[in-house]
Image 1: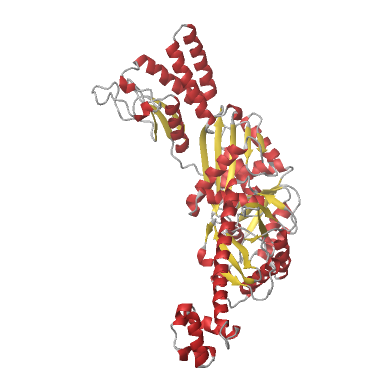
Image 2: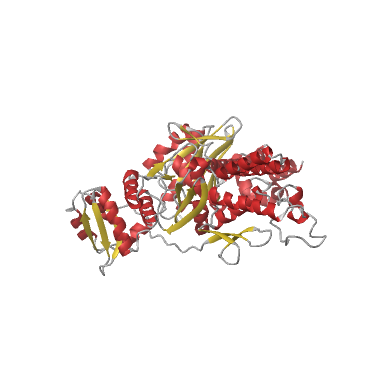
Amino acid sequence: MNERLPYLREKTSKLTASPGVYKMKNALGHIIYIGKAKNLKNRVTSYFRESADHTPKVAKMVENVYDYDFIVTDTEYEALVLECSLIKQHKPKYNILLKDDKGYHYIHISADQYPKITARNQPSGSGTILGPYVSPSVTKQTVTEVNKAFMLPTCKKKFPCRTVANKKPCLNYHIKQCIGVCTGKISVTEYSEIIDQAIEYIKSGSKESVEKLQVQMLEASENLEFEKAAKLRDRIQSIQKAAQTQKIIDSDIASSDIVATVSNMVGTAVSVIVYRNGRLVDKNSYFFEGVSADDEMLEDFLVQYYSESMDIPKNIFLADDIPDKEIISELLKEHCGHAVHVLYRQKGNMMKYIMLARNNASELLSLHAGRTGKELVALEELSKILGLKNPPEYIEAYDISNLGSSAMCASMVVFENGRPMKKMYKRFSIKNVLIQNDYACMHEVLERRFRRYLDENETDEGFKRKPDLIFLDGGKGQVNAVEPYLREMGIDVPVFGIVKDSKHRTRAISTGGEEISVSSIRQAFALITNIQDEMHRCAITYQKKLHSKITFDSRITQVKGIGEKKALKLMTHFKTIEALKNADIDEISRVARVNATIAEELIDKLNN
């Protein structure tokens, strides 16, 4: 707890409502955070108000604030420019600071008589070097693509081949993934032309390469060089096929950057996918520990990232919307000297590129979180479609199972960070509902679960932890049956129903009044389906176990003198029918409080 909060609140109450920049300082007078605001009083007040819901990193910063200064500006735009300048100057501890500590990667064309194209970490050796590229994956993918499109050799053979063994073509030649230089049928001149075309392809992309090859093909055809024309035709088709099956080359996207963020309890990862002249040329990714992906964080990132570069494209597409897109566009335009459009897209052709950026961000985050990229994307997608503030770390899901009005029970399955957490699973037998009523059963189960949570003396870890999200098997009826009661208990957890179709497959997510379609949201849909299958499996398993106990009970109560209460005592004590069959007469008499004759009759009944 910061002892200076009363002073800071009193100072903030007198602040202006004008735009400006504020500088948080520690007890030594060092600037630890710089921020901008369209309304200084409202923004600074949010840090020091009572019961503020801060992220861990912001909470830590507020604990260290001793005092603050501020600078008033005339406009929000001036505040943004000033904030950017001050962050560069002071590099405050709690601002996100971009660090470029990556190595560079290169494409190498060897100086051999028959050159090969490879990816390298260093621009060493003779030959032609293309690059540098920041992303190793983009470099390797480009090399793989160009070798495949032009059917270039990727083996370790030295050309021209001298021995009979080396002249024997490998599998790649037979499956038409290599032109077969080893056969000796490709001249140095012909191979040199192919390498020149491949280099042009790397530099300019598929569209210009195809146009040039088409001109060469027509010339060869007019000169009656039909074999050469056929080879060029095949090369064109190979390039076009490669371009259709991946997102590396797309002339429609022109020069653009695609920016996406993915976050969880560990921090936030940001990925920038760079397209120039219709070709994916680079990827830059950053991780910020303990930082949540909100509007302010993304705005700060964009300003810092692009203020360090003059290579700013015309279009910057965002996976998440921010309120100050126009102001940032204006700032970047002034910085680079041409129009810049910061755009937000939710659908259309750009979504495949946004998903590419999001997947790259999730893979980086997965390295820090110990989870796969798909799991993190699923949680991110789930939080967005359900309107949650943050991706749900801890999810509980409930299902009711019964056979009519008998063997009524429920399962509680738990998913943590997108994975089943089986040690936290719980099973409930229905105690207070006498006839089949799924709504009443769900109400009973949730009440019992959260009564345990509210009990200060509770020791079970599965009940002591509050979930970030609750799923119920069913539609709005189930949600409406429990949500109001949870609110009365003070349990502020979002509740949704999982709606199934006639074939018991996940169809949609239900709120208390409408349904949300999830089938088109691939990773989130897979996670929800996994949760639904798991909670159904657990509920059915427990229901079958209860049913077998009821069957066991009915066999015992067929013996005159043993009713339901005495049967229950016997089941509780002996656990299994085999144990009861082999029990001593005196023990049965003592447990059920029956005479020896009834005990003997029971054993005969079970054995026969």
